[in-house]
Length: 145
Image (cartoon, rainbow, N blue to C red; front, top):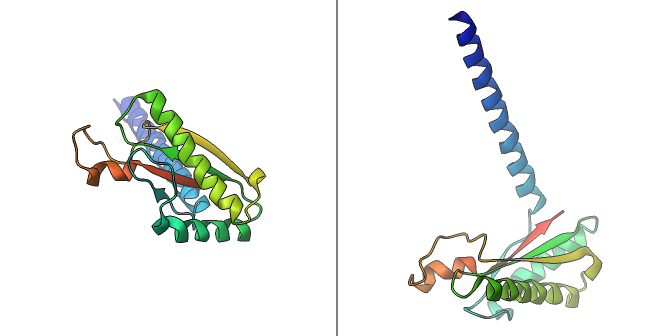
């Protein structure tokens, strides 16, 4: 009985240490993107909307003041359309954001892109949901490394 209690305490300790480790990883990932903000896109579009130009200017300024960091630009889509189409659309969105940043003076060798298509939605939306749900998934995220 005493042995089982010791095993239980050990398992709980390992579990709690594991949670602490995960919490630290999330915290450091969040800190590494500090100052970088996401942008959103209209349905089936990859052009930069004028209301997100200030966000991209701020992201470019952040990149220029943190010239030891590289930035991965992640393209995302909502769940409407085929998987293949959304991967391509996410790529166009990420490339569009990259081109905008390079036009603002961020060197292209510090920027890389990846498309996740609809894989990493921020909101779970049915295909029939209104745009207030879907718009959150149509985005480009900027991740500092």
